[in-house]
Amino acid sequence: MRVIINEKFGSPEVLQLEELEKPVPKNKEVLIKIHATTVTSGDIRLRNGNKEFLPFWPITKLFMGIWKPRFKTLGFEFSGVVEAVGEKVSKFKVGDEVFGSPGIGTYMDYKCVSENSRIALKPQNMSHQEAAAVLFGGETALFFLKKGNIKRGDKVLIVGASGSQGVFAVQLAKHFGAEVTAVCSTTNVELVKSLGADKVIDYTQEDFSQNGEKYDIIYETVDKTPLAKCLNSLKPKGYCLLAVIDYHHILPMLKAAIFGGKKIISGSPPAKIKNLLDLKEFIERGTLKTVIDRSYPLEEIVEAHRYVEKGHKKGHVVIDLTILQESI
Image 1: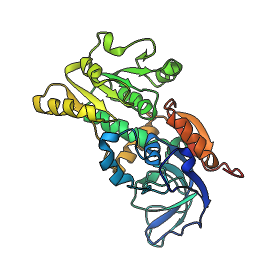
Image 2: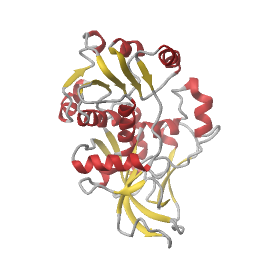
Image 3: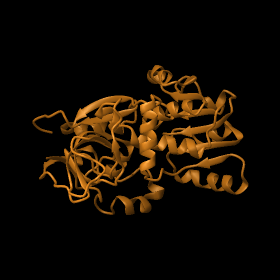
Image 4: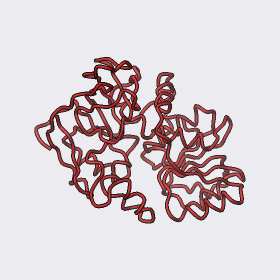
């Protein structure tokens, strides 16, 4: 089977295509033929050594690996088909279409995972390519909006509304009954409108912090807006949700926690199967859809990483493992 390996931190060129033996499932494992996976911001950070977060470098390096990558194969999410099952597997059968995030390492044709890992039957109203792009952005968006105690009638501003978190955040916020203002670039205005945003601000033409509007929730998905601008546009007891935390956020977060008023929240969602099942339910109701910007074969993983690293993708970049090419 084909596997993408990275033996050292660095540019996209560190990713190498190799051939390994197809694994055999243990008693409580299922063997999944992966049809699609994605390239996310998390993959970029793991590949390049998380250089942009220097203040937290010692902590992140413990997770990623000190001198060389702890995770030799990247990829957080997938969709595929169960090809074989272990003798004691009871939850899945051969031929089941499944999706989810069984752990880091989905840049490969086949993967053995525990039947109790974060996988579930794929929504029937999504293709493998669409389902593969659900969990990383969808789970994070759902986590933050719930942390912001979103409710019907809230005024919500989403910065980076056309990214992997943003496209889900717009749809989920509308589902919860909020009035959604989305911030994106000129080329993505129509896309974000199609997802249900009530108002779209083109950040190349307008600074949302200068329009006098006040919001119950501001969800900053991309770390492009100074925190002071976000806080200035919040209502007195509003929530500022930061998908990306940096050293200059720490003191304001401590002040907010001590003195109350406007709340600043960051973090990451706990890895629970319930999150996957909740998203699946939203999808099957027709509440959520994925947005795929580009799709690459596995052999073009380097080009896919280069594109994502530029920071201008619309929604998701998918790796389609059903497409075969001669060489990388």
